[in-house]
Amino acid sequence: MANMHGSIPRIDFAGIIDLAALPPPAAPPPPGADHLRPRWAAVRAAVMDALRAHGCFEAVVDGLISPELRAAVLGPGGAAESVLSLPASAKARGNDPGEGKPYHGYVGGIPGLPYESVAISDPLSPTAVRAFAARVWPAAAAAFPEEAVVAYAGRLAAVEAAVRRMVLESVGATASSAGAVEAQAAATAFKLRLSEYAAPGGGEDARLGLPAHRDTSFLAVVTQNGVDGVEVECGRGDGGWARPTLSPSSFLVFSGDTLKVSVHVHACHISLSLSSFFLKKKWIKRNLAIDLATSKCMLLE
Image (cartoon, rainbow, N blue to C red; front, side):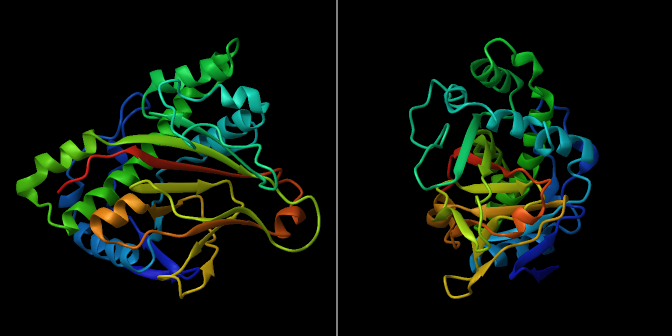
């Protein structure tokens, strides 16, 4: 069910997410009956083993994101690049005016830290994504690929929803408490974070792009643009660091401190390393990553 890939578990999610039932861009993923699928129990066991041991794993979901959708969001000239190429003042305008929490909007301009990111609040809502684009491009918001961003976020949310249900079932949620599980899902809000880890200006040594840290979210699902810069700490601090090599069908799933406190799994320790091989691929301008993380979550007791 799971095998070690880059020293963290690699889990095949075939049959777990009904690709035919994925919603159009204008709707969030339906709850469905994923927990009744034939492979559900076996994949759930592998997921929980990975979260308890490492706090993260690589989920492989073939066909979840089409090449066209991936290009529209992560490719050259796509949504992520178009936002992150803007001046800092424009990126800062993307912050949700209803939120004043640190690190929930634009992060950048930190001396010695080659990292920038922009967060889109409520990315499953076309209205919210449209409002973000209007703040960033007051005169040209219509050019932003709103539908592609919502569709991409919805597919990451389908992975998060499946993993979250597995976690809740593993700590006692059963068919009799299905209403509580769905209520928890309905109370969960997301942020879609577009991040850039700039390549080093020269030299052949690896360079840290973002210091080692743990996320405060419940769960986070991360994809990259083919430049594997994310490193994760294996085991509980005694297994070294791994840099998973992701395929276009792979997603890194991280547990945050909220999940660690609530469910007693291991919160994943993450860093972002930039090494010389980025520079040798001249066509790669930057290392882009997208993560979908919970910004609000009702916990079951």
